[in-house]
Length: 392
Image 1 (cartoon, rainbow, N blue to C red):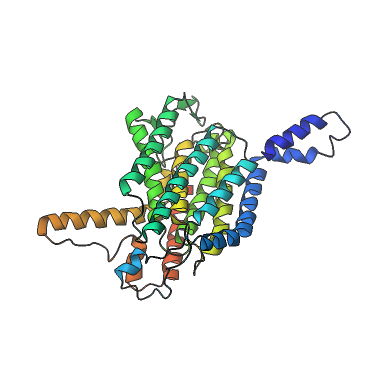
Image 2: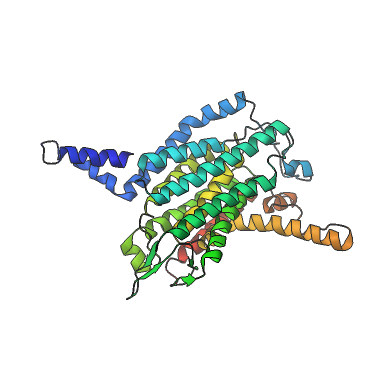
């Protein structure tokens, strides 16, 4: 919005006495400037709107008046404060600020529109789920099959839409320019050239990236500040990747796919970082508000679609390593329990409790210890992910 307004003013004043006075508006042409503006805008808006939204949620009684699963299971000796009664649906703040800041500072293109579409759809799904939990007062929420159906529909839409486009990325770091499709051709970390995987495999990868990432962040959201802190670290990785993928010179030098227009996703990632920092202000221990599924499903889905749009879906597995571990812990725990129950009649567990952060809580770690140590792991994953830019 500001980009188009600034360019319009420059056009109006061109060749007039006012031209030199408005020359500073040329700064809006730089993605770095607009990204910084989006981050600051999102942060300030979060600080300003945070208390208002928290008060609004309390007034509507949109609080977690049921015990969370960890408390219900018991045995968390290190947990001092109960989370019962804390307002949920704080993801409304994240999504509202993210969408507004992105719209304000970005130069609109198809990539930005797809990213915002994913955020809004998954946020709506999460809001419905949070509301169902509050009404039921049991933590049950929306049936998993309904959530999976909506996520799958979104993933298929994005995958098929991108598949129908012509060559959407280019490898410029060699003598012969390689044109590839974001879906049917796969880029692997530490590899220089894309692999022709075909339409079916490509769409499945897109589907797994969006659905898997959305649910993984959702499963990580169980401790004060854990999910949003890891989101911030992962968002910084994609801030770098989107800028590099959208810059023809840097992409050519690093021999990674150049995607025209992907640079505008840098503004989106910057807005996500600003919104995340603002939300962490109120979500750090002891949390004044939870993001709920309204925020976690949307943020996870955003990572999935960004990774696809810059032709780096497998980098998401590395950058979001903590999210992957959390999701795997649930899959392994559930699968092993069902398998052993079928074989022996008694279900057995691998972890003391899943997701993984609750396992460490049951081992006696304080909540703040778990969160900080997971932050450290997330930083290590981020460093490895950024290393894939050069090690090819």
